[in-house]
Image 1 (cartoon, rainbow, N blue to C red):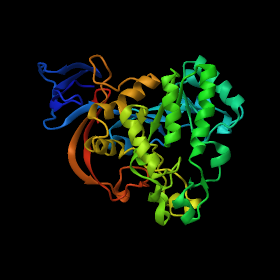
Image 2 (spheres, helix red, strand yellow; image 1 turned 90 degrees about the vertical axis):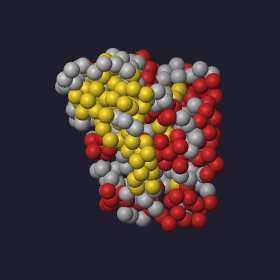
Image 3 (cartoon, helix red, strand yellow; image 1 turned 180 degrees about the vertical axis):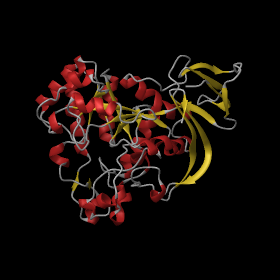
Length: 402
């Protein structure tokens, strides 16, 4: 590991300067004398920012992460073998190193079946960064109550999928004009609010921290907003897709736009943008879930939900900044600072003494998202063909230039 100085850049707060990195940590920020023999990078005209921390990805995909400036991933337990044992957690902890650090989320229940609690305490000692219900909602309120109490006592945040399984189990779209016209099995958007209301009631009883991986409807966001006003330890996330696309994106049976949760109405999309701007939404995540042709080139109802999002998370977020929805500092809190604080991870900010997870970004660099040219396991993106701006040009992980 060699020392490194990044010079002549701009920071997310608008100030100018550079970073001095020594022994994997940030030694100076702003203006400083460059020690003799230190490797330098000229970041003139570019942004120096904390690397991204992606909350709730479904795959270990180093190429996609590095392309998008992500150096830490909270990995969902929905793997070929659900992450419900300490051995599996320990294996995932080392799976992406040294370039990408994987912080696995322990399966809340054995096999993610939603019935018997998994060995959460052992998995926490093995390196689990939190607990997650997986792609599904735990319908048994008694199980969810015990989960929150157990995880909370261990100091772990529980991540919940916010869709009532009784309503949404067989649905592939959100109930509305688009789903009706296409003849798709659909669930009302209220399935999200019903799940959130139940989980919030259990948080109020237990006092345990809870994070909703995605909240995508006006009614769901209203419940989270009210819970925060009451002081409940609740946070929520969202993806760029649910901020930028409505359910009309699935017209013509576009399976790349089949997501979980499904895309919502235009009114819900606008409510999500407003919630992001006002601070109700805490985290912007990629929901990275690469699916190959065998999973997507099928009839809409048979195609697997999910999108490849790690490589486009930052550039789509920068689009929200240019549109005036949020500021640059707020964007990097959504993708770096807030995830680090919520889950107790290193990084997330450029502070003296902090771990040197840093990216250099050319904010104005134009490019086009192309599904067949993405640096990812698979390029299943609903943004195929979209012109965007903003590219990560260098990544530093723990002081090492990648």
